[in-house]
Image (tube, rainbow, N blue to C red; front, side, top):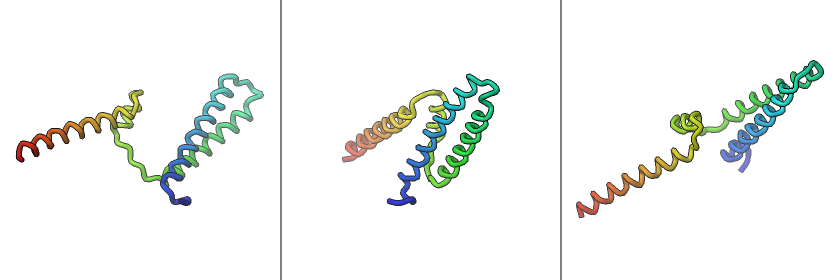
Length: 107
């Protein structure tokens, strides 16, 4: 399990996301208390954020993960993506029961 391990790549992206969130928080704190003395730290934090976003894009390009659009829409609507998984699973169970009923009827 080296650098080509899909889970390793996903963990790298996840770590980059966490780092980016931390940088955004630091940037928020700097901006919310901004005065002229904070100009250089502000620029450094902006540059750090841009660099980490660039790193995240490069790491993400190595990951082959496809997320259904329905999941993205659920997240955009502020809902839990596990709802999508639960609904798909419930639909599969219902279809399985229908198929089982038909199979039993044919027997």
